[in-house]
Image (cartoon, rainbow, N blue to C red):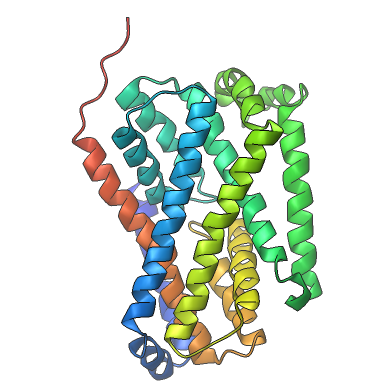
Length: 307
C-alpha cells in the first residue's frame, strides 16, 4: 500500500512539473501568480457545490432503497469517498459501503448499488455536459462522447438483465458473486426511470458547477474563453482521464485539457496554468475534503452488531 501511495505521489509531482514546464516555467508561474483571489475562491465554492449536490443524490438514493442513516454519518461517509478520487475510475469509492456498514450496520450489498449508480449517472451527466457545446468540438471528440453515452446505456441495460448474473462465474468476479447477486434488486430500484432522471439531473448540475469553475479560473488568469467552450472541454478531458484508468485520471485529463484549451485559442502558458489550477481546485481539493471527513468519521464509534 505504501508503495502505491509513493508511486501516486511521484506521478502527481511529475504531472505538475510537466504541466508547468510545458507552458514555460516562468510564463506558467507568472500566469498562476496573476490569479484573481476572488476567482480562485469562486472556483473552490463551485467545487463545494458539486460535492453538496452529489451528496443530495447520495441521500436520495439511500432513501429510495430505504436505507436509514443519521445525516451527520451519511454526510461524512459520502465525503470520505472523495478521498478515493485518486483511485482508478474512482473504484475505491466502494469504501463508502464498508464505512456505512461500520457505523450503521447497513449491509454492504444494500448500499453497493448506490455507489455503482453514482458512477454511472456521473458518466452520463458528464457526457451530456460535453455535448452542450458539441458544435464547437472536433468531430473525434463528439464521436468519443456519443460512443461513451451509448456504451453506458447498453451497460446499464445489461446490468439489469438476468444475463448479468452469469458474469459472476468469471474468475475475476467470482469473489464478488454473492455481493452482486444480493445487490441486483437494488440496482433495479435505482434504475427506475423516475429515479434515473433525478440522478442524472442532479449529476448534470453538479458537473456543470465544476465546468463553470474551469471557466472562472481561466477568467481569473486573463485567459477568457466562451462558457460554451469551457464546459465541453472540462467534460471531454474528464472522460479522457477516466478512460486512461490511471489514478484520478492523471495524465489523460491534463494532456487532453491542454490540447483542447490551446485549440480554443488559449496560450500555452495560460492553458498550463489553467489546467494546474483547475486540478488543484477540483481533484486535489476533493481529496483533502475526503481525508478530513475520514478523520472526523473515525471519531464516531462503530455501531454495535445487531443480534
